[in-house]
Image (cartoon, rainbow, N blue to C red; front, side, top):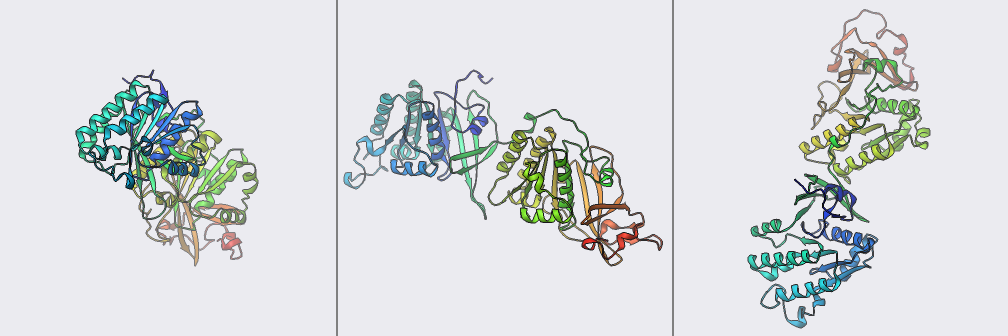
Length: 508
């Protein structure tokens, strides 16, 4: 059983501390591994700066970078190295470079033991509580022999432990062999940083805690980003840890016929998928729900992956939905998302923050195509989306997912990812042709939260807003896109005004 009484030290990143179960157990040696550019140096500086802020003595042992280079890295994040003691290889008094006619690549020209001796003297003199050792590649090259390298690391581990220092050993993995897996057994904990370059957009970074002796931690991969100010970690969401009590009353849309179709409306704490071809009215239906929720004083957030916000607001005004007053009152928040600049883990973190800190009661993702573009790996995407929806459901948040289908009429498919089974309710929109007019049909395919109508109704969008007809009882084959009219010769849809060619926006 893990020791829950362990004294812990912060990494300087609250989200990483959360992944580690509260931080790093003190006076231990940890391995931080990752290829160049994965963020090790930035993490090390944040770890030490957190110690400086707490009034601790800290030491940065750099064998690969100069103090000037580290100062440049710190300045790029708006930091100062004041309070951090730097130990550079050149400061050990060893003749390096051209003047000394030596190379650090040969142990017989520059003794490993002499460098380690200078480092231990520095530690004995300073008595730091935090040490960053950057990097092991130089020690590995100096040692050459794997056995000698392992013995030297083991001796350093024992030395730092006697001095009650918490140490991060950085390893860029460039000179590692198969035998270097032994480092994992020597370290008290192992943190792996990864950097993945995609075909388009920014590089994606993620980290994983490989081990943490005597302590529980959040397993799996966690996305992170490097921005001005350091590393920003987005812990993997575990929905079961975030349950809240709420009323599961139906959510009204302001359109009685639409509410009746859904058996009263979507229940709070459920997700609704609105699917159909482009231009069929998916976003418009969501805008109706957003406006009605804002009138009740509930905060709604729409994450717009595809459409510009200004275009969305113009379109809403055209059908009589003015969202600007609600935006001014901070009841409606529309956020433009760039799928090439954000990872799914960061998006999940943004949504979680909206719910927990701003008490948002409705979340809309428009559209799923943009969300899917944020991650090529479909299996991982389904799992992350499922966990996000489970979290929102347990928080009593109503979620709308907009999913454009490929094709306009006739046979259509949902694209590269079928998410209909995840949603609690599915609203299907279709185009169909009747009497030389393009019309829209709306139907409910499923609703886990309540009984629902199995009828098909025509959806009309005009300056008056959204309207639904009576059930299309005199048509068959509407969902195929090519229906057959089976009624008599009376008014087509039971209301002659729907046939008025002068109706707003050409609506039937």
